[in-house]
Amino acid sequence: MNKNYSSLARKYINGEDILEYDIEELENDKDFMIEVINCTNDHKLYKLCSDELKNDYSFVKFLIFKFRHNPMFIITVAEYYLNNNHDDINNLELNIIMAKLLPRDMSLKYKACNQAAYVGFKYDVNHFKSKDKDIDKSLGEGFFLIFDMYNESTIILEYYASRMLDDIFEENNINLEKLLHNEFKSPEKINEVGKMNYIINFIENYDPMLSSYICIHPHLVKELRNKIKDIQKNWDNYSKLDEQERYNNMIDMAYNYMQASGTNMCQLDLLYYVADELGVLDKVEKYNNMPTEFESLNVYFDTNIDEDDIKYSIEHSLYEKLVYLNVRKIMKNQLFSNEPSDLDELIDNKIIKSDSKNTEKSDCKILVFDKKRKKKNY
Image (cartoon, rainbow, N blue to C red; front, top):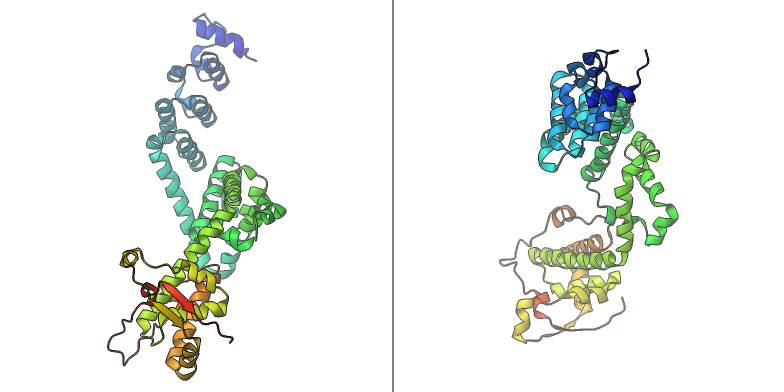
């Protein structure tokens, strides 16, 4: 018999007799109780529902979304279901829902359950990839496995897609701002490619199935698109800061290496000599500032950089030539490489002169305030 839920719900709410139906039957009827709860907006009616209904997952989801602003109530509903059911897919989905809806301090348990499930999955994926190189290439982040297991749950698929997208950046130590500056000459070039197209192609390099899924669920990368917009707005400022950081790091690294090497060449002379060769002398002079603690001394030293002396040292000493080549290597790497290396990575064996009793030399960067140099053709 078809039930007129609207009419029955009004009678039930008003306490009228419902002779044609058994009350217990109605309180076990999902559609009827949804109608009653929608009419009253009263979560207390949950207590009147049968145990069978409290374990109906679609009814549980209805209650949790409807009363999502009542944390204590939805926790009661979710815990009852989780403690009495062992459907892995439903339980996983419910944990994801609860972690999203609850305030941070009340969602920790559900987030921990989600994290445990995700870590377990990632362990299996990495185990498979370590055993077979062919699997390593095709498996990617493993999204096609997730799609195969949970294709009926959009909530689970979107959760795993978002987690895998985060992992791509974290596990590969990707700085999005630096990446975009390395790949594009201007923010306008990004617009020519298209932000969404760029994101899809980028993800495809790591997981083709994940890339395909995001194509039809673009809202998953809304935050990423917004980050790219912010990077475009900050484009010029980043370039200035990046230049300053590169030159400061390069100068510090070059001086540290030269001090450790015990070279007989003046460190400032050699730094400027190589900078002139690389065409960046003006910028090296700009960023090679005197340390603040020496400014109050008001002592000035005039230094004429003799390029002939530098050339002579390089041409007549294998040791000094090696120092020169290493300084050049440091400067090129720090200024022009997309991913500059640390000194230990760049110079495998930092050379120290065996006949030098004291490798500490006068640091010309500190002493020279007024720099005069002779321009040579070489």
